[in-house]
Length: 489
Image 1 (tube, one colour):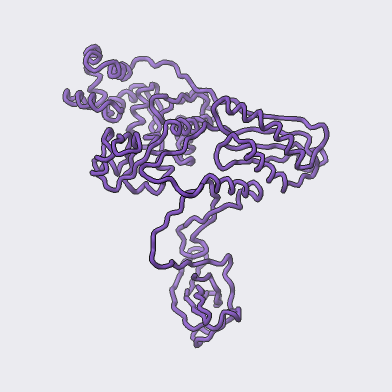
Image 2: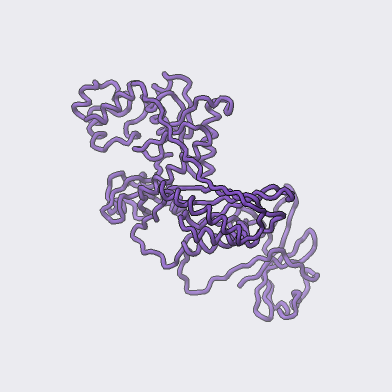
């Protein structure tokens, strides 16, 4: 995952993607630039530069800090995603975002190595990560190739892998700037140039780091893969003496199971991201079990917050028969620190409290109860947005304006109006008598399309009534009807 800290910062601030962006070491003007995106690189921002100097080169530079704990958390999440494709995953502790994977024994699941690499890329892309994959036989060869390949590359032989690694520029291997400059003065630009130098002289002049790089690039045998072990699932289970359907008594039993789960999470330095509850029902029920995923607003170890969400779910649950068994399973993540904000005041609104309130609504009414509108590319107004679930809240952004902006509100379904001749005079009554007659009609604004499936031709108008309302209505030419799409307020 190239520039993992930079990807983490852009996930927190997606509105920055069109600007020069940098990750800095500390939230002050003397902080050092650690990572930067392509726009910042084109503006002349370099790694190791002071933040105040980078601002002089790119005045619209966006910068922020990424805590080490946040990087560890995201790296653990990525490792969990990679376990879906191979049990052998070894994260590199010194290079965040670098993992070596074991491809042995997967031939029954994937037809070839290209398909395996494509499946890994697809999984990470769906999770919102940019990734590059190289499949080969050595650690150094695959790492060097992954630094320069576009998406993925699979080497058919060790010779092809070695030849590709020799063409990689040394600047792509994150060497210290002073070592890069010293090697450049010697005319050493690529890995192949480095291999041709004597190993003993490199150790004396440049130290053990370059000597190790020379040995690995020359084809020294790799150490065996040391895969990380997936954490054991944290579960709790109890059998009830009698079939139970009372929500209060079920909540009490769940509370007894929840506290040991939270203590085990705390001992491992993890927090609960979601709680799975499974109720096994008596044989008289048509459905043998009921499952529910309870998700707090943020990963937490607070039992009262979780029990409050469980209580809201149990209050609306109607069981066909009593429960005879309760099973809990925790989805755990590493504890995360609040991301530092660079040169900005802390917000006055408590987003954590708002997310806890929304979590209560989701627990009581379901995930579809908390949604937000997302704009889509469509020519019809009712198709120009969709409702998508809300996972995290962000601070509202607004521009100061001297006048109150107008808002166009859409009806869930267009309201059909009584018929009107196309060239009728003003004075048209729009359904409800309280609105008064139309005193001014502006339009038409033609919207047409859909000829490839179901043609639509509409003449949109703004109608102002005697009471001062401004209604947004249209005439459907094909069906010869007038409908109210919405109102302007």
